[in-house]
Amino acid sequence: MADQFSLRCWGARGSTPTPGASTLRYGGETTCFEIRAGNSLVLVDCGSGARNFGADLCKCEPVTFDLLFTHTHLDHICGLPFFKPAYDPRFEVNAWAGHFLDETSLVDIVERIMSPPIFPVAAKTLKAVNFRTFQAGEILPRNDDLVIRTVRLNHPGGACGYRFDYQGKSICIITDHEHGDPEIDANVRGFVEGADVMIYDAMFTDDEYETYKGWGHSTWQKAVALAREANVTVPVLFHHDPRRSDDELDEIGLAADAAYPGTLVASEGMLLTP
Image 1 (cartoon, rainbow, N blue to C red):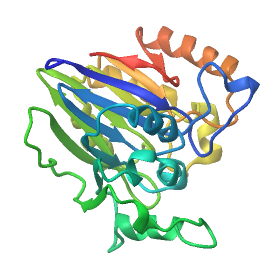
Image 2 (cartoon, helix red, strand yellow):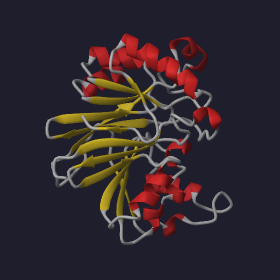
Image 3 (spheres, rainbow, N blue to C red):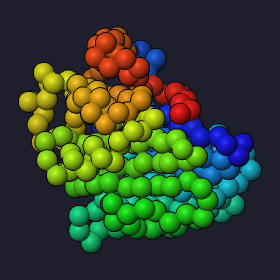
Image 4 (cartoon, rainbow, N blue to C red):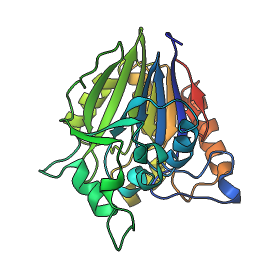
């Protein structure tokens, strides 16, 4: 559809996949988001959730699409070796990363994880993938009506947030970000200003945060505070702690909605249309 604009979550968990009876409702797969804007497709991160998305995509007509990495920690890239379209030359996958703080490149990271004895299939078998680089803060080049802006996040080794604007609507994805750096916090606040949907790192609670300060993650309380300050319509709590059960996420969701009505908790399969 020419006017379609949506986000589907294929993985909402942080750090490591968490299959099991206590994670059935919110899901145990790690980060993967599908963005649809008209006829355009963009995938954000290739965590374990990308395996299911890739299997579904291979049932459709081959397409050209962008794969944007927020960063290259394992929970955000572990699905790439199992992502079927990446091996299918009928597809064209333009894979982008802009978070690096040194001369490392995306292809360097992929070659490291896809090499013996870590993995038996080499990165060169990803026939459909073109590796590309940008600097966080840039607007990505496109030839359609979707505008993709980027912002640097505060996370060990660097990370990048994305804002998608299409036909007057906006979706922001802010993963793996720790509040506390005044300059970065101010940039992120301006970046998400007025967003219709904001996916935001809420791995911890405020009570837990002091124990994990410096790990590169935020809290649900900071998520709703930012949403209030930046006039975000729907904040979505994301990057769930792998120890967090469905029942515990229910409790956080109730508290967050009471603090900022309309706040959602990300779950596998969730579809949002701003």
